[in-house]
Length: 420
Image (cartoon, rainbow, N blue to C red):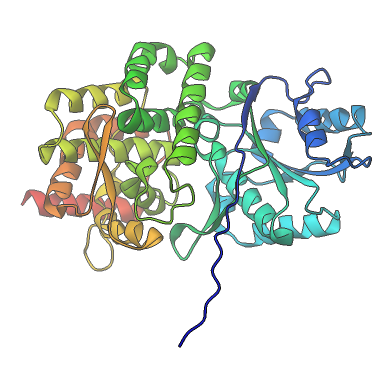
């Protein structure tokens, strides 16, 4: 005879993304008003700890002082606990747990409580790390995100995930913790290097392919403007892409990924592995573009997708400036397995359950499969090399994003073996 107590616990979240310019100008009251809103009638100013991506601070040396002046102007509402803290950004910050510990120490030293704010300002990798620190200190303190790259403003920064890499696996340590608010300030996009301006485009193509054919048509129409980084076109892309991502999170019925499916990771099973193979020399948005190209060709080879649609998608990615092949895609591991294909099991393992990969039947028509034909996947990888390899090698020589020497050798051996 067993006894049990069961109660259903429902927790409601409000997920908000704001779009603005000049966030730290004194006449922009958005941040101040958000912090007042969360004050719960307390007369005391709310503590704020700012963590800034040092790459951003190099591009915007006025930023720390602008934040200090903003908080001073509203000192009755905001208590800046210390000067903004500069922290390394980029994928490297996600590969070291001490970065988390440092932020947690700052939270403790500055007496940040659950009614205070940790405010991250930077790219997606820094926001992932700061978000995880905020989610785990005091079992969760309020976190406000300022994504500053195209990729973080239209994808990673507007989600509810936080995480760092560990044990050779991407985002192995992490949490689901919706931020108090996300503020997309378009002024940050202006100072980005070209690669970072482009990187977020691949996530827009991804969500259009699985969710919204009209958005894909818009991207095709705007492709020439996006290729030269027209601000109006970029803002339109960011806003629409962010809206589609947030709508999925809110309406999919599985915002914290308890199931086996990750439709928003279309093109990502190969992308995550390619990033690791190249030691993150290939950045996430660039790897996603290659991953999308691979899955699009695979979908065509499996008879799911018409050749005309396949070519449209590849043409759009190329017109946006993406290279669609990297020799790391044909890397082999110590067991002489193709490393990318071995990554399928890691992709499944990350959620558990059965392997679930999103593919497309047409533009805007995503669907799920539970098996991948590895021979067809391998042929798709070789097709990428045949179609785009020579162009990518030529372009890469001027961009300094070579894989490691060993990966290059492995890739060449793999092609040689496959063609023999």
